[in-house]
Image 1: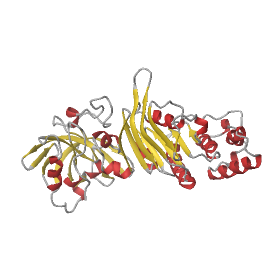
Image 2 (image 1 turned 90 degrees about the vertical axis):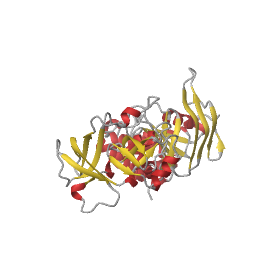
Image 3 (image 1 turned 180 degrees about the horizontal axis):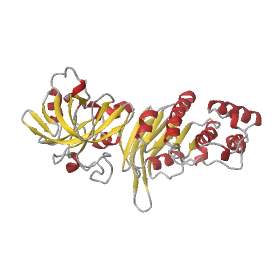
Image 4 (image 1 turned 45 degrees about the vertical axis):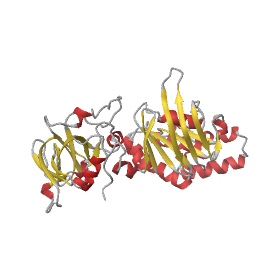
Length: 393
């Protein structure tokens, strides 16, 4: 196990493209750190620099207290798990897992012991004499992980290892991967574009955009206290509702209704670059069905809307509402792309989503009354995109 420290890490390609810029990140001993972001955000380039597969243009990379910028990959004592498994098809599972150790001239008894122990951890004992072609996708991925585990490296680097699996198997493997990492306690850097993987797997998550680190925090903190519009829109499914609102005297006028400015909202506006217009964010689960509420808390805001699309998810509904010609964030900041072409959210137009319990009497084409507590509102500066509100007490 070891600590990994990225200090001002920068990657500039020969054509001048800046893939990663001044990345500062400390990964603790035994921590599972997730690098997440859309395609082209620099997460895989950062991982390849840690592995030694990509030359570092500027900055320092420290592993286990040692500066390793000039170390070749084989001297960094790091094991990688790739998206495409990269197994030898003519070798058995046992041979695939032991190949690296054999090349390193490790004693045969030691190799046998490590392969046996790793196979038990990964539930591969019964498959040791099979070839990859006789295994399922999940089993092949476990073999790829086993090949890395037997080396007992300082750290694991994983580049979207589950993306080739179907949805059900991906969910199963997420659980397996978390269990294995907890059991081994090996420092792990895991790259993914899937924010659900990021939220469920990581001890901490680093969100990247256009080569720049936006925020690094626990999954819960990222969700509840996003640093800016990009993080708020990228993390969470369904995506956060983002709407423009006007500030008039003591009132925040929004498409969802007027919100009285309490101390929390006043403090937020004082920290903004402008106070006449803001962007508000509200998570779908914070919109409540009024018909299921006996008594609403003081200060709640209520509004009615017609359900345009209803998604039945089994245990809950995702109810979509069309806000019509009312101002939404899509007019101020396109939820599919921000000013520099990166995704901010995953919905288009004036769409609002509520996450409702399955016992809600909700139907497409019908109107429903909803309510929310202003304390759940996030307020963002429309110019810089930064979040202005503090966490809800």
